Length: 127
Image 1 (spheres, rainbow, N blue to C red):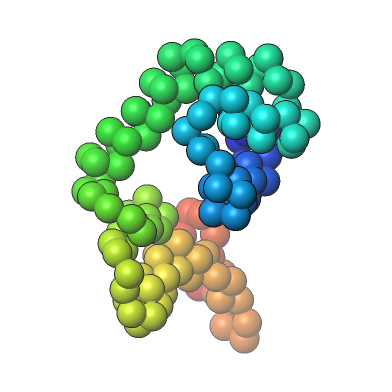
Image 2: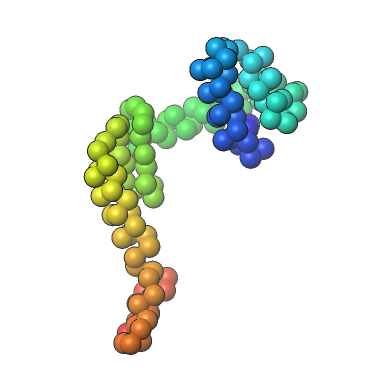
């Protein structure tokens, strides 16, 4: 629901503060409603979101999609919907995955025009 109001990052931060600093039970609906209200989200809309089955359904869909993609724990990163990095990995693993993703998504569209007049666009390259 916070995402709908472009408040995802703010809500995430509020949840961390509430739990880790203030010692609040972030599983308590009243705590969640209060956090949403503090972010400028209507109290009744927050209450409806918490008590409604719609968001439960959406969360369960996300969980099912994650499982289908082999996610079994956190952290888990999916790059360009194609490459996955699971767990805490050395920097080199992320570097390689990011470079491969970059090569496949950005490099093919680089402008190769120069002295030879070559160029690329979404339809391919011409010389």
